[in-house]
Length: 145
Image (cartoon, rainbow, N blue to C red; front, side, top):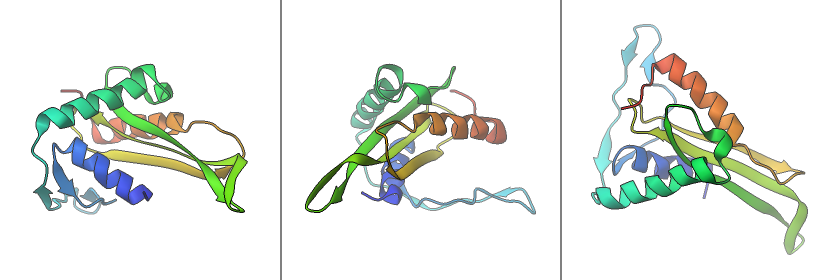
């Protein structure tokens, strides 16, 4: 999957089954007018969405994404690690790393993907997600529901 496909899937979860097109512009800076983007309800099994969000929350509370946790917020997400293909096999010392997630049960449905490619250590980038989302909380006044 591409990062854009990942963001779109997580946005489906963050928006209760509504499929949205990812976008960067939330507000027109000149007028402070919020932009309304079209969406389409394509999945209506809220129970399945809730179960998946619970599992992704477990990644942050008890799994490999602990450093993405933000006190007072329900962060859901998943770390990703992939070896790099080379010479008909896989490199043993180069990886692509990512974390994708959002803050569930909040006043926001922002999704954040952070990734690094071709690194020489098998690590984790969830701390970068944490820092970006803490900034978003402040900038967009995101509050838990």
